[in-house]
Length: 80
Image 1 (cartoon, rainbow, N blue to C red):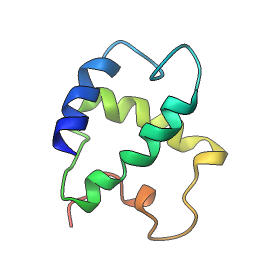
Image 2: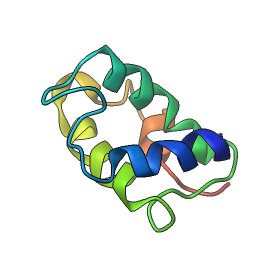
Image 3: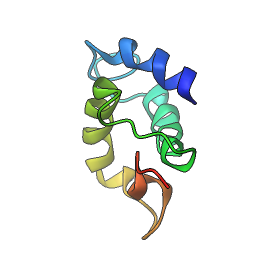
Image 4: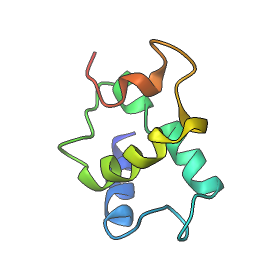
């Protein structure tokens, strides 16, 4: 996961979305992967600001809301 997020960070440095100027399947796939950083003990907020900046508006969309309390998305980047 460290390698993925480390490579994703510079890619997102000057982009609002992963592949183009709107949300695509690429954003959905990456959105699903990013919350697992908390599960493996990575905090992304300070170390990967571009990824955190991209994640915030995605996660605020109604369709991207957690399924319920304790879901991986609700724990984004929190160390266990």
